[in-house]
Amino acid sequence: MELPDVLLQTVEVLQGERDGGIGVDEPGSVREAPGDWYRTRRGTGRGPGDGGASSCKPLLEDLRRVRPRTAKPLIVKLTPNASEPQAVAAAAQAAGADAVSLINTLKGMALHPRTKTPWLGGGSGGVSGPAVRAIALEQVYTVARAVVIPVIGMGGIQTGRHAADFLAAGAAAVAVGTESFRDPAAGARIADDLAVILASERGLSESEGAPAGTRAQG
Image (cartoon, rainbow, N blue to C red; front, side, top):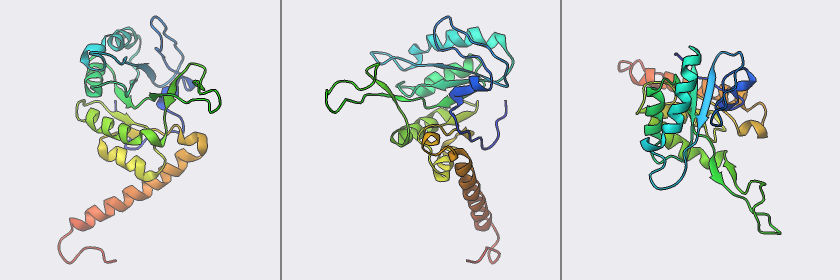
């Protein structure tokens, strides 16, 4: 599968069922709809021995169930809570994934200012946005060097420079999620900013590689 050099969306890749797809979120649950690509996600727990290659069994089981059902692209969204995300990505690749996307949210909590008890109904929830960007960038960098399938980077991308950093880290494409809640036009804005940055960097690179006396002045 080939992905565009730059893919920016105003929603996370995880929301593929809006355009159609197969989702595997719970054991034994497979949802199907017409679409151009399918997605599956699996988290790994936190505990002794969790988060590495030994924790990939549920993910592999899901992929073995989904992969035979379609020849369309299958994107696996990875948890950031794995101690060895590159091992999980490699396992997904070996099981037939066409691409991996990361990171999903980090586990977090907010307390009610008056009761001092967990504010969210489930006690904890997913942390996303600017706070996770450095973590996402490191994991994309690590995973991109462990697999040959495309890596879709996401996590706190707010500007064209952020998107450029993820591409430089090894992502074949990026996705914009949380920033779109603050600015619904974030995807288009970031894409425009990124195009300017990439054009500028290409021009600089070409200038630096030109013979002496032919570099652009300025």
